[in-house]
Length: 139
Image (cartoon, rainbow, N blue to C red; front, top):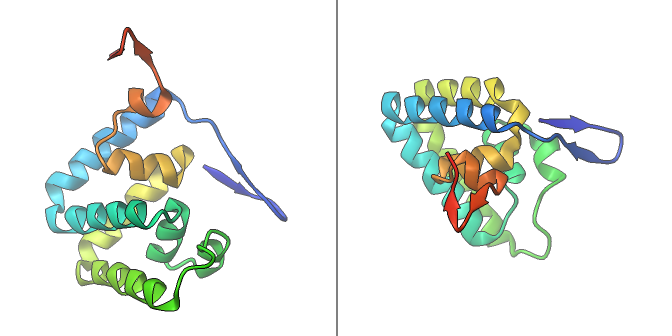
C-alpha cells in the first residue's frame, strides 16, 4: 500500500501471506476475465520493456492522473507516451473486466502496484520477497 504524504510516497512492507492471497485472486481474475487479464499482462510487460514505473501504469489505468504524474517518465518522446496511453485505453473495451480489475487492485492495495504487477507477470510471492535456499524457492 502506498501512503500519500505531502511530497513523498512511503512503501509499506507486504507480508508473504498478503502476496499469496493476491496471487490467488489474480489467478481467479485470469480465469474469470481472460481477455482483460491478457490485456493487463500486455500492459505490464509493455511497461517493463519501456522501463516505466508500474505506479505510472496503474495510476493511468485507474484514471488517477494526479497520482500517475508523480511517476511519469522523464525524457521520453511525446509519441512514445501517446502510444503507451493508447495501449492503456484498449483495456476500456473490457468494461466488466476493468471493474473487476479495479476491485481486485483495491482489495490488495496493501501489496503496492509494483508487487501487484510482478504477480501478474507470474512472479511468485517467494520470488518477490527473495526467499531462497540453495537456489531453490522455499514454499
